[in-house]
Length: 84
Image 1 (cartoon, helix red, strand yellow):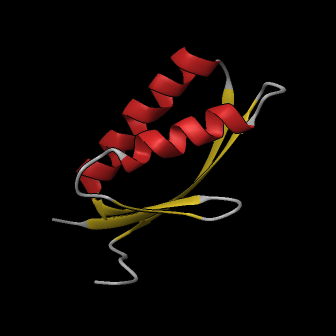
Image 2 (cartoon, one colour):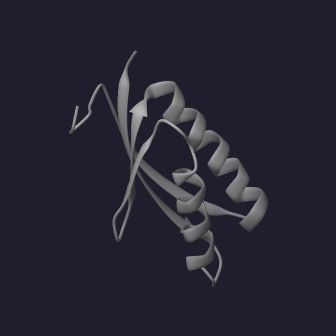
Image 3 (cartoon, one colour):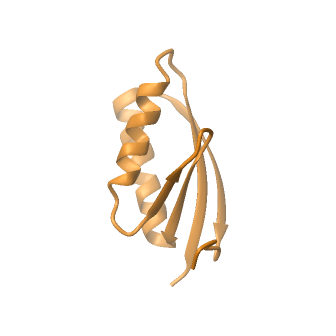
């Protein structure tokens, strides 16, 4: 199985931008099998490729339903785990 590291940032298109960001980070932390680290400007997910991509797919769709439009910017590094 392939590991992947994804760094993702969210830019909600609403005035109250902290509420959606906090909710997305909380949701991402709820997935099993992922290492989630949050920094001031981005959140990093590390895990098996399929698990990470499934978590992102579910979370982005959920975010749109809950909070409306947002811009997500992601860097995806297949095969990379900084702390194997």
